[in-house]
Structure formats: C-alpha cells, structure tokens
Image (cartoon, rainbow, N blue to C red; front, side, top):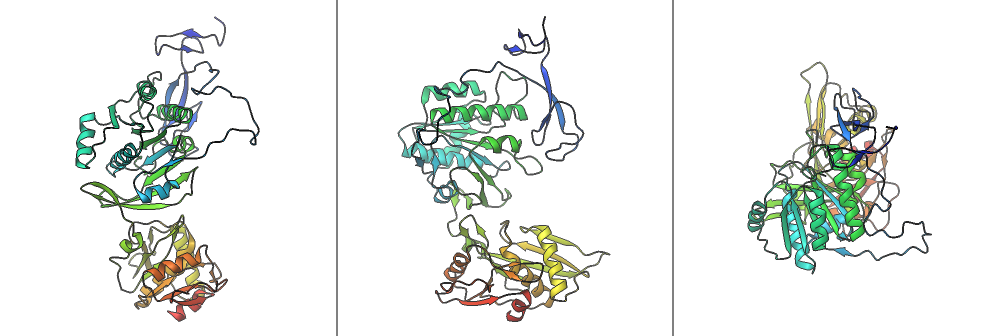
Amino acid sequence: MSRGQFIPTLTDGVFLPGGDKLNNLFFCSQCGYESPKWLGRCPACGEWNTFTEAPVRSVPRKQNVRAGKVDATAKSLGSANTRTITRVSTGIAGLDRLLGGGIVQGELILVGGPPGIGKSTLLLQIAASVAKSLSQPVLYVSGEESTGQVSLRAGRLGINEEKLLCMNESETGVILGEIERLSPSLLVVDSIQTTYDARLPQPPGSPVQIRQCAQELLDACKSSGFATMISAHVTKEGSIAGPKLLEHVVDCVLYFETARHDIYRILRCYKNRFGATSEVAMFEMGEFGLKEVPNLSGMLLEHRSRTPGSAIVIPVEGSQPIMVELQALVNRTSLGYPRRQSSGVDYNRLILLLAVMENHLGIELSQYDVFLNLAGGIKVYEPACDLGAVLAIYSAIKKKQIDASAVFIGEVGLGGEVRSVPLLGRRVEEAERFGFRRAIIPSQPVDSTIGKGGIEINPVSSVIEAVKII
C-alpha cells in the first residue's frame, strides 16, 4: 500500500491517511495549543505538564465547506453584495449597549463565566425576549440539563413563550439537523463544553471538540443568517476553557467577572466585531433572574466610606464613565519587607505610583505595608485613577480625610506630573450629576466648557500641587 493512500477504518467510519493508524497531535489542556510532539511547558500559556496526546481525524477537503456558499470566487469590495446590518434587541438595555445596539443577524456570541454565575439564566431570558419579538422560533439547546429542568427554571423566571423551543442534545449533527428543520432566528447552546462531534474520538470538552463544534456552529449561522449564543465555563485559573480557540472563532465575547456568592454580576465585553469593546453592564441576581442595575455609579457609591484613605475616581468603561471609591490602607510593616497588594488596580501600576510618591513627595514607604482596593468589584485598565490612588495613599499615611465632595481625574507620570486623560468632560459631567462640588483634574489642556454645571474645577500640573490643594 502506497504512502498517503486513504483506507476505511472502523474507528469513526471515515477515510483516514497514514495506513492503519490515526495521526496524533499533542494538545495543551489549558489553552488548546497544539504541537506535533510532547512539550514540558506550553509556549502559549506557560503551564507545565499540560500536554496530552490525542488522535486527529483527517478528511478530504470539500469543495464547498459552508452550506449555501454557491460562489467562492474573489470580488472587489465595490461590487460585493452588502446587506444592511439588522439588530434584534435582547430586552435588556445594558446588554444591548454592550453588543452595540442588539444582536446582529448571523452573529456568534460567547458568554463566559464560572459555574453558577448566571450564564444559563441570562441566556434563557434573552431567548424568551427574542422569541417574543420575532416571528421565527428560538431554539434553546441544553447539553447539561434536561428539558424538564430548563422548564422549571423558565417557570421560576416567569417565562412561557410558545416560540421558545428547547431540546436536550449534545451532538452537533443532531443540532444542525434540527436547525435545518426549524430555521430559528436565534440558537442558544448551553454549553460548548458539553457539545461534541461524533466523528471525532476526543471526549466532549477537549480542545479538539471545542474548536470543531464552534467552527460548525459558526459555519451554520453565517450561511443561514441566524444568530447564535454559546456559553463556556472557565478553568480553575479563571480563563475560558480553550480561550484562544473560542475567542478567535466568535464575533463577540461577553464575560462575567463577579464572584458567584455576590448578588451583583458584572458583564464585560472583551471583543465585538459589530460594536465597541471594554463596555460593562451590572446585573443583580434576584428571584426572577438577572435584572440590570441602570445606575451603576450610584450603586457603587451607596456604601462609600468617609475615612482617611478614601478617594473618588471616575474610570471610563467603553463609553460609560463610572464613579467608584478607591480605598487605601497603610500600616507599619511587621515583617522584614513591606507588603504591596492591590485589588481592581494593576499591581505594577501601584508599585510605579509608590516610587513616584517617594521621589516627589518625600515619603519613605519602605516601612509601610500598602493595600489598594477599588470598591465594588470593578477592575480598572486605564491610568485615569492614578491621581486618586496617590492622594488616597497620602491621606492614609497622614491619617487625614479627603474632602468628600471632591473627585480626582488624571494620569501620573514618572516625573510627578499630572497628565490629561480621554473623555475628561464626560467624567466631570458624571461627577456633576451626582452632586460633587469639586473636581481635581489635569491643568493642560482644560476645555472651557468643562465645569459649566456649577462644579468647581481645580486644575493641577503635579502631584505636589494636588496634595497642597487637598
């Protein structure tokens, strides 16, 4: 028998190359990275001893991969047939904002988060809302629960839509067959880890199965035009299982961040091909499911402390300014070296700010433990909170309370200068809306329209000036 000749096997009923054995690859169980040989450490995620060997099915390339793709020839962009993007509301205003205005026809959306955080509840609420607003049915596929269990949850949420259809199935071939029969407007798959392709020898949840099933669902929704939402659990490290595989395939990535024992859930958008990224929405888990918290800043400031070490900052998530309390705690160290710990703020940023304070404010911090916390479970990925962090730490050291009516906006450079940040006017407007009377902002540049609402504007050029004002 010649090399590379295809022969039938009894393992999965398809033609396999390489004689009488399958082609084997090694896959990282954490991130899905694949290698032709075993590696001690994964070059993608850096984990040790995570590679497992698995056979990979090889099938002849088809002429048309996606159903419905008639013409695969290249065309100029000017002559290409374009369609107006139509969006469907999810029934939740905050979620529509995260998605850029609603669900786009043919969009594949990934909803990630730890078990018990509320992914299934959110997907069921969205499915019911879409089924109520459109004429076509919505198909909810659950691989983890029976239809009776899904029906019990729907009853608790007050959902009783005739066009919301549910099935308990994990095999993609059966799911795609039901899609062809029903032609749904929205497909919900809960979860991608339980879905499998029967032609592959790997178990459900393996990187190979996740990639194959996600790709099949992508091909189906792009060719037929229905939107698809899939849920995915996270690993013990807190990342989506097979993150590189799923994030590259889907159009939008939504992720729950808050711990499941908290009644509040923060949903963040990390990727969106049809809208802006880095948007957030907050939900409250109640008796009748997830309910949006429209006044996010008010909720985060509801239990603010008025003690030394507390400062109000205004980060921006996407296009939404959010007012949040930044808390600092400083103690004399009882160990041989000082501790540095941050929650919600980048640890390396904290170390940088402490070095700036030592050099420009003349404070010896080597004898202090410094703890910095952003209240409410919010995580900040921009430097606009630098000025507030410096003043909160300074306030905690001096045991003096900061003016409770003041907010702090600005980036702090290595030279101790206070630098401007984007969307400065919108941040100040948010402070005005909540009745704050003073805003300490960067001195250059200052728009003449900022502060028209009556708030006092105190521009500063350095952290030394900010400390003198406060």
